[in-house]
Image (cartoon, rainbow, N blue to C red; front, side, top):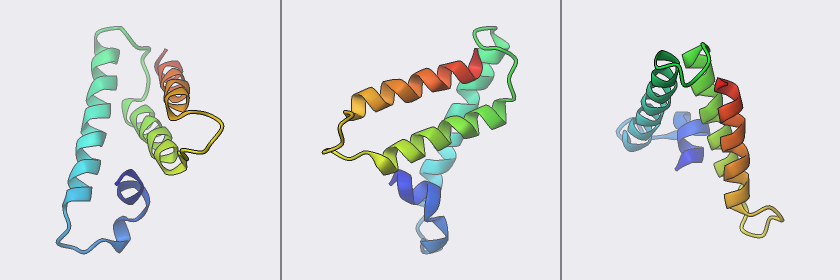
Length: 90
């Protein structure tokens, strides 16, 4: 689903709104989290929209590239991307 939401929207039937809704909710949630952190001083003063978009890009790339047979477990990749996301806002 993450791959479809990020890369295959043009292939979707106009009546299939589930992927669009999921993508929109993810964007709203990430922007809200980054904005809240900036406003309360937890995060540095960053460009909220650009940072949220970069975080979502990390998530979509990660979801598309996870392979159960890969040498790096998904949990480790998730922690790595979480660390990158934190560096974007600090």
